[in-house]
Image (tube, rainbow, N blue to C red; front, side):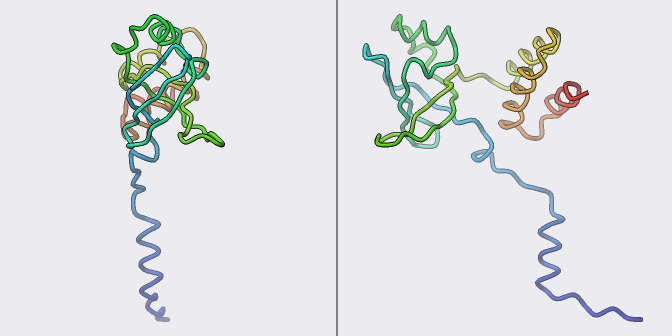
Length: 150
């Protein structure tokens, strides 16, 4: 018995589904940018790499060292940050929350390994996920993720 030829649409859909998933860094990466201002009113602005401006309040900063730098006026040396974007009803700019000094993938994985040794697996996994969001194909991060899951 001879099977009929599949339609061109079906062939195209099968190729699309079987193709390796391609991820764009923009959609998976943690937003990051540079603090452009911070004043004595305890709020400031971040100029993000995506071209957007975000506002933040001191309580939106998750890192104590960065908070101290903001309060002490030395924040310009630690101006590169990563953050989570949050909607801000009634404001011109989106809000940046959970702001942290920008860290490279290597330092994220080093911190994750230290946390694993301290049996703080959920915190370690969060750092590994941030590293994988920045570099999805990084084998070192994938191995550490597997190790934590086990």
